[in-house]
Length: 370
Image 1 (cartoon, one colour):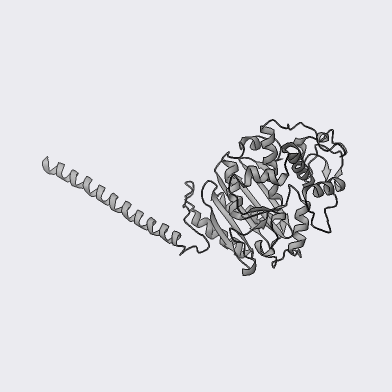
Image 2: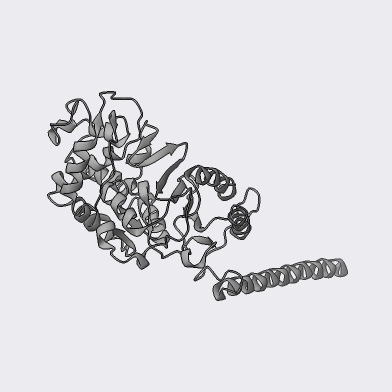
């Protein structure tokens, strides 16, 4: 009886020792792996440690996804950068450089085009939440000279249901201030009266930028800076009139579909796109901006995602997701955020067409959300 008990005891002790040894070896290997990543030996383009997560459904690690994204970008000869992972964490970063002079690093200023509409939508939503304006407020309260303004609501503008078409958006010179831009837009837009019909229009968000200014008593730029850029320390997020040196932004040496990225031409277009494409941002700053949004720090996220429209506050709404796309002068940008899983990816590129970007965006979604 004693010998049998002794045998059982030895067996238990052996199992415990083996388990401890395996655990120790696993931790040693993982510690070495973390050390390699922290030192940048495996990923020289990634500065600093970022957590490796594992999808419990299929065991795909962020390292696996990085490799797939690298192959995708190389196969499509993309000059750009992808940030992906848990939006509440530091992002995984994948860079692809086709031209060292046009390398899009994580801190490089980049024209975000329509991704700025998210800023504008949030600002209006903040004013709505503060009861300073309503979704049902009509445009004639602010712009009575625009045809059908007595029937167009703030909600229509936010969802591109206003019936307003963009008119001539070509300017010979860089517009100097917001008043000049608003005068230009109001003069050139076309209000069709087709209210309730989907029609994507930068003019919708330019008018919203003007409304933000009228309600707050400060310029749109000052309002965005005071309420979002400064408090959340987005130091590499700037308006077009704050950037005067072309070397501060992504180089224009790479071209897409024949569109040169001439700095002055870019600023002309940005000066017209008030509230809809007049900002530069680094990839890291935009990642942090989406983080602050989804963590309910700027406004409650539910005030956006509860909308029944397919587009609202600058983003397209899907089941458990929202996304936005931007295109200007050959620069393409996009992000998709899954607020169900907290997974996100951002793509900035300056050498592919908008059509190519949409194709890549779908493939990135397959990789990042698998």
